[in-house]
Length: 250
Image (cartoon, rainbow, N blue to C red; front, side, top):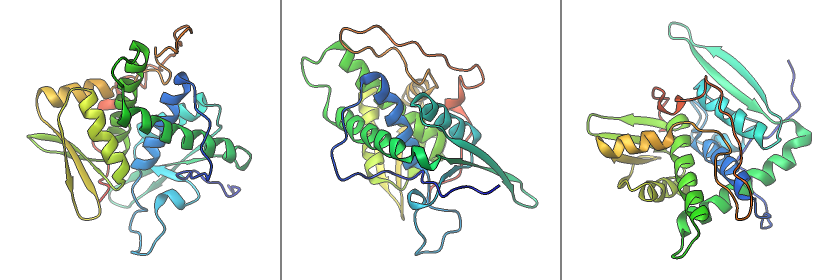
């Protein structure tokens, strides 16, 4: 099957995007974090283009691809999900997502706004005196960042830590701040071509795993003066935040 060239890459726009409503921000921010978790192309040459500049995005875990698809559908961005099977003795699946050409502009604006607005809210707040709704929003953004990392980044699990490997410095900083919002101390350790963000085993790990469990993509974060949003998570999606480890990012 032939596809029109499509771009499901990390969006960059020269202008400041319009602010998103709080109910939409959580979905857009989580989708942007999922995208930033994708590692460089497998077996790429040293000068190969990074994954965010290719014609699509691919995950090697179905739950990560399904979460991305769910989020984009809730953001009214159509997406095509394809599955490719590879390997000889050890079979594996690659889940590829494509946005149709006519929706690429909306996709770019939405994820760009979601990343920068969500990053600003998470790294900068909540400020003293912030409303309970804004505090819940910041907590939800922290949970979304860790959920994305546990679904799509490289798991680094040892007896004494739960860690994720990332190639994106900004996302690593977001995870450190997100852990602090969730009252969990996290460590950042630079590696060769990647960053390892980890939390200690025990109560810290349990809190992160509970916080990262899948919830409705638009949860009960209400804007001032509005009703709480309703969201439904398919039974097959609940609990997917604690799925087995995926491939390492570096």
